[in-house]
Length: 249
Image 1: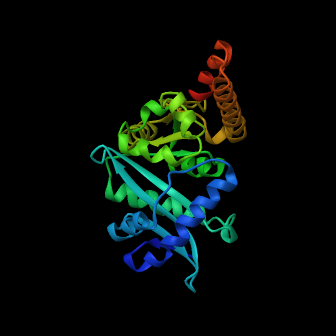
Image 2: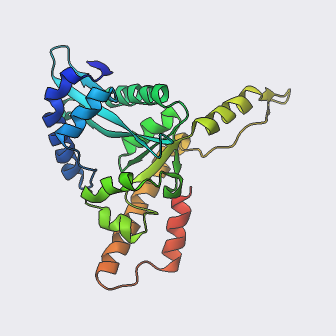
């Protein structure tokens, strides 16, 4: 398989890509912002997309870049892989390529993502992303308008855009550079202890635990939303507290 920068010559894949995005969202029972074939073609023309194909030209996967707040924030959106090529590692390669392209085009931007998929969370973590609250994402209204076509949009709005089924993850180049600087200054003492060791949320080492937390967060959100729809006041204060603790982990 070939993972490369998408070009205008790849426009004939646009219909296939958007159809698979929609079908995949339905199969997961979640949602993604719908994009038209024309929008996908535009990303190809702008050099802001990565595509994967076989050597014979069969479409394999795709992902594109969106920029918000005057390029302050960047999202690697619409990651999709053809069903027959899933679990081959190609999604990881596409994410690495689109991340590299984002860093090249927007070196000072914070790169963020919203996802319900644990596999994508793991890939993001390996690239340096960390789980964050929604308040750390872009406030650009155009970005949030893209969520309107998601099946969970009502849940998002019922939470004042502070929480939803997706997990927010962020790569902050300034923060990463500072951590790398501190790590370079770390000294191993004769006792084998590390000095000046920086703190960070241990996502990589707690993947299974984090998966349980994500599922519980989604369960609480759904239950809260259904109760609200049925006339209830929503979750108890204890549940709100627990959800807050899980989400801020």
